Length: 175
Image 1 (cartoon, rainbow, N blue to C red):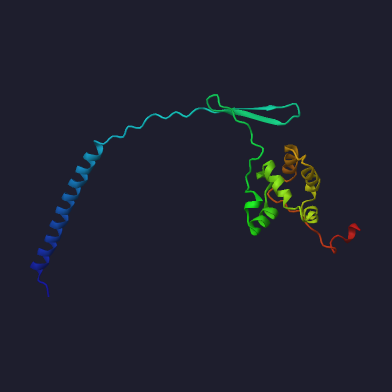
Image 2: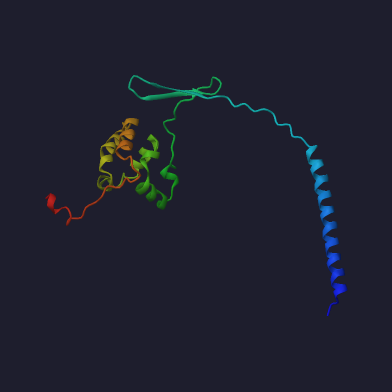
């Protein structure tokens, strides 16, 4: 059994060790703090150019956007896409784009690519997306325009683009 004198000796020894450790730790922190305060990083002032963009309408009422930084002008690229080209997609990704592609995210080229996915099965397009059948004809003729894309986007403002299909039992009253 530990005597009372030995217990007090060990407690005092532990308190002295903690006190000395505290003093050494604070001195190290103060030294590091002084060294770090002497270091300065000179960052240059960065000023970014202000872009200016202008939208004009041509004689066919098509929007033409021009603008840029420091006298450089850019125009809208008609081949810009949000989705990957279907030729770069595997079969599973192509099917996902075909069924879940969102019109509000599509560019004109995306819409053309999406319509091209229905090349082998126009019936599926007419069944699932009847509002797009007219645009498929324009796509095949090469006459699809931004107005067609805007029209389909305005028809499908919600995130649900599926057309409800009715079974024969629920549509008998229409026959």
